[in-house]
Length: 239
Image (tube, rainbow, N blue to C red; front, side, top):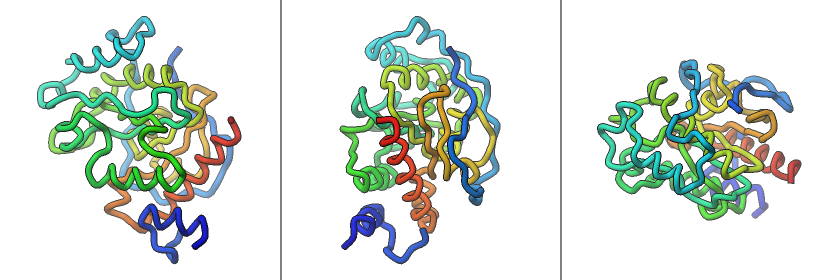
């Protein structure tokens, strides 16, 4: 079995399947547009949260998130979901927000979507101990609905500080909310993926589909594999 086939199999893809403020995106390569997922929502402006002003360290930041009441999501959470993994990782994975199981366990990407993410990482020789995983919002939206603009804005400073502290060589954005929030754009994911962008004008940022979307649309897994290969290439270029 070839290395590529092993990677695809690890992701559950059949071998014959097809394949200051940080704003703005700078493309560093180009490709044709891909089909979009859903109607995009323009992300809000992102004021730095007052709780994280003054460049706090990990302990202070995690404490601020745990006690945060800046938006209505705090009222229904079991606990906040801060992040997990290597705090000096080369790769930082950014998703949307916690689901029911994440809210219960306090860890991002558990359950079926988390298992698929684990397989995606394993296909590249990575795991949860070698990357850092966080979400745009730290509390579960009720009923797993999409985060509202004001909820994304309330958490923006937390995510920005996490990125500053990790100082990754690459950011992998999973899904619409992560991509649009990090790049401050309303362009659909299908049009953003397939090329590298820059976060803060310097950190390579690659976009792919959210694992939950891939579970609903397994025919897109081959494209997600292309995105992972692109991300690996970007990491090698900045190593």
